[in-house]
Structures are given as C-alpha cells and as structure tokens.
Image (cartoon, each protein chain N blue to C red):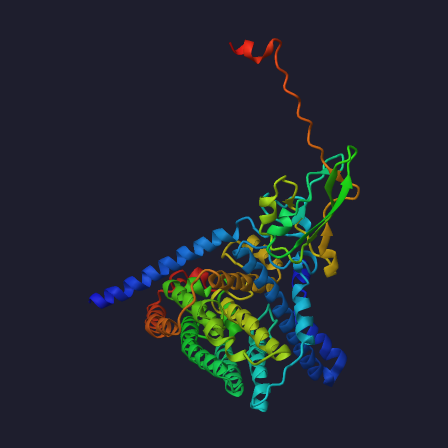
Amino acid sequence: MLLEFSQPLEYTGLANWFDTTLGSWSLPVKLILVAVALLAAYAIIAMILIYVERKITAFFQARIGPNRVGKYGILQSVADVIKILLKEIIHINNVDKFLFFAAPFFMVVASMLTFGAIPFGKALQAVDFNIGVLYVTAVSSLGIIGVLLAGWSSNNKYSMIGAMRSGAQFVSYELSAGFALMTIVVLTGTMSFSEMIAKQEFCWNIFNGHISSIIAFVIYLISGHAETNRGPFDLPEAESELTAGYHTEYSGLQFGFFYLAEYLNMFIIASIATTVFLGGWMPIQIHGFDGFNQVMWYIPSYAWFFGKTGVLIFLSLWVRWSFPRLRIDQLLNLEWKYLLPINLVNILVMVILVIAGLTLTDLFPILAS
Amino acid sequence: MNSILKYFNGLFTGIKSLLIGMSVTWKELWTKKVTQQYPENRATLVISDRFRCELTIPHDENNEHACTACGICQMNCPNGTINVLSAMIETEDGKKKKILDTYTWDLGMCTFCNLCVITCPSDAIKFNNQYENAVFTRSKMIQKLNHKGSKLREKKKEQPLKFPEGGLKDQVL
C-alpha cells in the first residue's frame, strides 16, 4: 500500500495506460513525452546545480552566497537564466560562421544524449542499452568536438590554445575513466546499467571488488572531474593566460550552452559513478533484515539516486575548493605517469579477484542477489 | 630501486597532503560566515572612530560652536574644499568683531586628509562617522556646516585671582 505512494513514477503503469487509451498513436506520444521530460529535467537539474554550487562554494569561503533573489536566494538561478536568455549574441567578424554556431550544440547534445541512458530511478530510464557503459562513454566524449570546433572557429589564439589544451586533457582522462568503468564491467560481467544495479542489491560494486573497486572509484572521480574541465583541472579556461579559453568569443545564449553543458557534465559524471559504483537507485539493503529493507524501499528510488548523486557532486565541489590548480604538464603527468599505470594494474588485479573468486559476493554468497 | 621508492613515496605523500587540505576546507565549511549584510546590519555595524566621513562643526545645546572664522582651515585645504565666509559685527561695547557667516564644505572635492581638523586652533571642526554619503545630485554635496542662528561660544570669563587677606607677600613669608 505504502509502496504505491512511494513509487509513484512507475513507468510501466503509465505506459500501459497510454497503450490502452491511445492505441497506435501511443508510441510517438510516449517518445515525445519522454523527450520533453528529459529536456525539462536537463534544464531544471542545471538550474538546481548552479544554485547549489554557488551556495556551497560560498560556504567553503565563509560567505553566505546568493541570498537576495527569493528566500535564501532560491530564485537566483531563475534570474540568471532569464538574464542569459535576454542577452545579446554578439556577431564576430572573421569567424567560421557555420562551425562557430554549431560548436555549442555539440556540447549540449553530447551531454543530453547521455541523459537517455542514465537510470534516474526504478524503470525511470529512457533507453536501457545492453551496452550502456560503452554508449555513455562514447556519447559523452562527443563534447570534446564542440570544444575543439569552438576553439578553431573563433579565429583567436587564446581560444585555439584553450581548445587544444582541453583536447589533450579530455582525451587523456577519457582513457582513465574508460578503464575505471571497464574494471567494474569485469567485476559485474555486464555493460547494461539496469543489470549492474540489479546485481548491487545487497553489495555495492565499490564494496564487492573491495581494494580494486575503491581504486577504480577514486580514479573515475578524478578523471571524471578532469573531463568536466572544472576545479583544479580548469586549464582550458585559464583566466590569467587564456582569458576564457575556448569560449572567449562566445556571448549570450551560446555561452550559456557551454555553461549549461559544464554543469550537466558534472551531474552526468556523478550519476554514472553512482550507478556503476554505489548501486544507482537501489535502496540500501541488508540481507536478512527484511523489516529494514522494506522501510528502505518506501523511500522512492529516484530519491536514492539523487541523494547518492548529490553526495558525489558535493565531493566534487569540495575537491574544487580544496586543491591547488594544476599546471598543464602536471596535469598530463598525473594522467600518464600515475592514473593510467595504476589503472592498468588495477584492472589486472580485478581480473585476478574475479577469476580467483575473491570478490565479496564470491566469498559470502549470501550477499549475491 | 630508488626511483620506484621515490615514485610511490611521492604518490602517497601527495594523497596525504590532499587529504589534509580537504580536512581544512571541511572545517572551513562549518565556520561562522563573515559576510556583512549591509543594509540590514546598520544597527550593529561598527565604524571606527578614526574613520573620516563628513566634516562637521559640533554645536552644543545652546546652538553655539567654536569657530572663530579665522579661515586657517580654508588656507590649509589642498583642494579648496572649504569656504569660510565671515561677517563683521559690532559688539555691545563698540568693538568690531569678525564672526562666522557661512561655512561651506564640498564633499565631492574632499580627500579626507584631515589637515583642516589638525590645524584648527579652536578645535571647532571634526570628522564624524556618518558614512552614508551618497546623494543624487552634485549640488547636494556642497554642505553648509554651521547651523542656522548659531553663534560663537563665549569664552568663560576668567575669574580674577583672589589674593588672600594681607597680600601675597605676607603669606609667602
């Protein structure tokens, strides 16, 4: 009874209702509704993230943060969005017009495509690929084309250098992120997000592979953080050296697209880490404690997902305001001399753990779901 | 062998120092916020006594001030901010006397150097703590400092020295 209230977004019930009432029109209607819902989620999540980021940043710096627009400044990001929508797009001479206008869309589309594969809750997943991990990795790396196009078409040395740096950074760290995800693919034996979550019911992947999983988790967070061009890795937009890097020449809504994509990438990295390492939308379950498990199920699955993702986003902000910024050579050193070798050894260790049956679910079969 | 040791040593000291950094920022997250929320905190806002905001001529309860219209402040002002207009009056006992007519001070020109206050021989002017000086027109910055109908504070009549009976000589001897 209570479950019916705590899991109101159950997709199958809604889908059945559409099938019966709309007949042959149900598929296009459902597709459009899903697209609209995802786009709305995209915008709303970005607005919430901007507000949360500004608040937490302020707290880390012993400030109060936005507190004038609305109670506690809640409407600040709404005001920001209105401002950016009304701003003039300045047309720049001597740019490659087509590429210049296409670049922001690459960024936004790349992060939007990943949204389709993220499981936001139980059955709240637009497309459940059997190769979800591969899809997300492939699609999210499209964003770098946007950055390179922006830098190239701006016809500006700062943008160009910023884009090249971003390219070097992104390609390097994509490698580490891919390997870290691959470690977990070795552990779970599946690339589909839904199956991965189902296997994590009693034992999250981060515990299941113990030492190897934890290393993979940390490496994924570091490289994911570097991919979003934020925090200590914000080299592409080094203000003192490159003004604003690849988006120097952009203004108004075009700049807004880059800004939006940056925040959404942070969310996407956190949500993939949640899904792959922390059990996704699966509530905390302890084998044998049926009463406790039942109570945990009363909390909606999307609340679990956003809670875990929120913790990881907080971690990324914490890191952003703690660590010194890296120089470009230090950045590449970190990847090629530390993360990549450790990752390669780590994936080997994981293979040994799985083959030798030393994962937690192998050692304690009670934990397997 | 040494280089391998160095590699891992560097890695672990790096991780350790990063964790120390994170613990520092974690503590900072919970500290009291130092932001001054200005228009709301007017009542509790502390302005240092030495902060120079507006030049004033302090008037006492009888609407009297100490300015003798000598003009030394005007002469010492590097920007020509002060303009002392004096007037001549005749006192009851027929003496001619210079008194203050209008004392104008231009806030927009003042650099708050305090030279006028330092050089004033009768301590008639001083800077106060009224820090909200924004006005909408430039003409409002030129202020008249002496109040309407105010006059110079009379110096207290010195009491004639009373010598004891028999004269000073006797007392000393």
